[in-house]
Image (cartoon, rainbow, N blue to C red; front, top):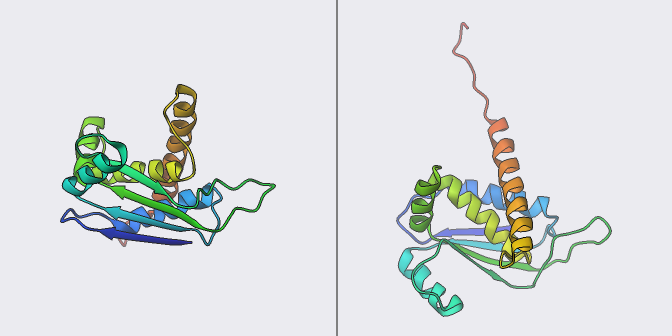
Length: 162
């Protein structure tokens, strides 16, 4: 699985954590192990250009997804297709505002947006109420499972002598 990440901003972003999250989601969604994904962190000006060009909507947004080979989640009875999953662009300053409003960290918001973007690349959408419920339930499950898995790796060692 090839996951390329690039931070084109001055905002500090934990690319290793985003990589780990993306790899986790792709594995859980049974994306072919040779599939390619690119995640790029951009500023508000660059995001606004993309938002206007591709969505015809003003202003910057938090995440945009650009699918390439229209890969879909793997199933038990079908081998997943190899190919290019696509590109995700994230805007950390928009994510920071959203995180503040939601009461969590910017890092957590960027993880959420990474999961959200990958689900869009895999064909999930939230335009209709039933689609929204399916996508957001799956997004929540994937993110919470990733965070729980990650926190279970953290070991607190008591000081010597205790």
